[in-house]
Amino acid sequence: MDKIVVNGGKRLEGRVDISGAKNAALPLICASILTPGQIIFDNVPRLGDIRTILKLLAIMGADIDMNWPRIKINTAELNNPIAPYELVKTMRAAILVLGPLVARFGYAKVSLPGGCAIGARPIDLHLKGLKAMGAQVNISKGYVEVNCTRLQGSVIDFPQPTVGGTENLMMAATLAAGTTVINNAAREPEIIDLANLLDKMGAKIRGAGTSRIIINGCENLQPADHSVIPDRIETGTFMVAAAITRGDVLIRKANPLHVSRIVEIMKNIGISVETGKDFIKINSSGTIHPLDVITEAYPGFPTDMQAQFMVLALKARGKSFITESIFENRYMHVPELLRMGADIQIEKRNAIINGPCELEGTTVMATDLRASASLILAGLIAKGTTEILRVYHLDRGYEKIENKLSSLGADITRKPSEIY
Image 1 (cartoon, rainbow, N blue to C red):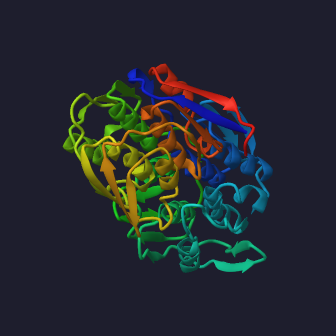
Image 2: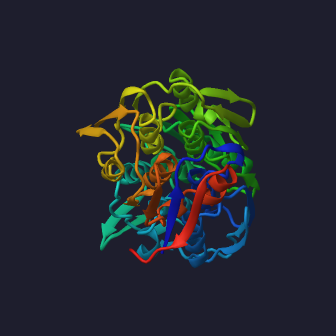
Image 3: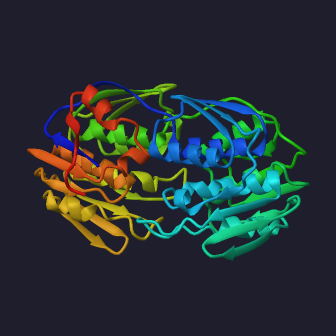
């Protein structure tokens, strides 16, 4: 097991390229199940979660050729519609194979994903949607089994937006008989990217990116090649890294429209942000003012940036407020930040951050993916050396982040860890 070691105090300068979005690549890869044949994906990030979903498809019978960032998937021989616990337990997004498997084979048996460190993320809305489309659903011994000769178009009303639920049912609906309408659908860029691939494959989808998606089912789909969109959370993380180190950083291969809320907040608190078609330039030299943000479904402020913005608030002059409205247990990075000298109070789902704070490097423990990123950011501005343990969380969502930060001037290395 590795650790990340950061010697703080370095100003970040230079250029950095953003990788493909993990949260877009995962459903795109699952969509390859819908049709026999080969699909080529470009700009696929080399991450643990991507390897896991590819391994799952290989177990089901797909032929996988990994030549990062290009991945070839041939599902012509895929014939085993079962997703075992051993893989699903390591990554909740594996549930996204459920809809495509049922749509193509009329049957799927997928392990329930189990708990999650940052809070409950049930799949009940996925299953209710499949039931509305005529499927029989049975849960037994930790697995969900779904049977349906052919799914039928239906109107599905989500009580609240669900990204995974929208993706699963959108994929399932492409091969259903008739029209499916998803109301209160998730609006994330990853939803649009998935719809773009499905349209290339012959699907008929309208409204992706809005709260109402309409899918006209087809008899079959055809393989199509696709390039994954840039990772908006990695983009936001590097924006924060540049801001807190008083840096001057050009972030390339990004999509500024996908992080418009982050851009808006940063400008409002005194950070210079310049955007172009595929770049964002951060220059932070003046006073950083306090922030007040609430995590919301897209296009609101993303919960996946909450931990990173808490570190940004530690550099602000005054009292900042962050409200976590999505997950009930997503402040697990706070005790580690407190150990570094942060002044943070938690009141239920509200965090009050008093800045600016002088952090001191120490040994900290990562608890989840975005918490890992926040601790690296804290290490960048801390006095002395910070060691971040359990960085296997980090490797699920950031491609070689230590190399990218090092190229910008950070003193950061990856080393073997003797502590687990």
